[in-house]
Image (cartoon, rainbow, N blue to C red; front, side, top):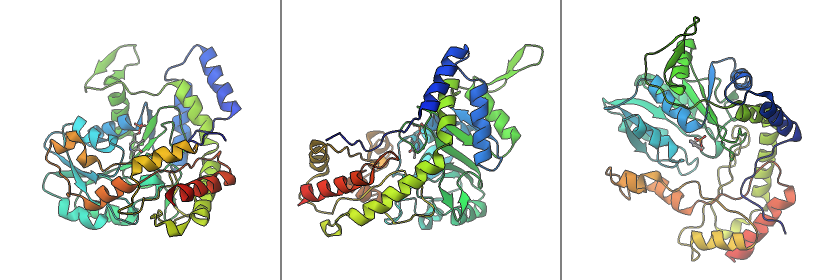
Length: 369
Ligand SMILES: *Cc1c(COP(=O)(O)O)cnc(C)c1O
């Protein structure tokens, strides 16, 4: 039987033809396709300014710089996320302050944020883990009360919504990722949703060496920028993917529902929150039973032996060496640590068939028993 990976992008022939067209056109870096992709993304978020970047990591870093966050500042975030979320805080010279997650949503516990706020706190970076949105009403109520910026790490929640409002259409700055494993991809890539044109202008400078071009052909540099523009090759893929985003997410929700039907509840796994209105079901992540006789590594190997790929997203990042060296330790965020030790990502992607979900559930039962 074919190997079933935990994720796989769906790229249609029209997109492949568009990429070939870009390659033949003589202009393959940032150009008309990147601008068209930005226009399509802006429409997706209700007309707000959007700028594309070579990754969501670059977009998060630029968002912090646009917000003026740097040395001496603290940024509140979650430990249960891809390392990029807190790495960028260190990159700009600020200090990440973790807050534990909720056991049900596995997202930042909003009840614990206020206790973590100090005089140095400047921003909150919430993460919609697996595409399940953080409560935007409560989040912004806290941010407003304490005059904090919010940089939404919505890398996983493209097309998801909070109370019917699509993620990105409301709020402060919002970052999406188009990494190959996300719900829509440009190979590598990301974007930043901004509040106004002056933020967008600064963002444009920061993503390309700080350059401002003058009409007479001259230029100026008045701020230190990096190099994180998106190529037209990537933008052509992104434009092709956007046409399918709704269908992709609808299919993901249907497959997730199927997992809940097929999964043997007697095994003692903790299934994710069964939420089908707001989440875009970026991942399906049961937690292994506590005190299980089979270790996670052995489970992953056994699944692979049966032709099924299993991922881990993510171990709690405050326990990584870099963060331990900054003083974080075991026991600091017990819920994130517990979820991080037991989580497994089972296959979920739009091209999967219903039978594939049944097969995964059968193999999990067989291995676990
Ligand atoms: C993927 C991801 C990122 C980084 O995205 P890149 O485009 O790979 O830089 C950041 N945060 C979260 C939560 C992610 O899942």
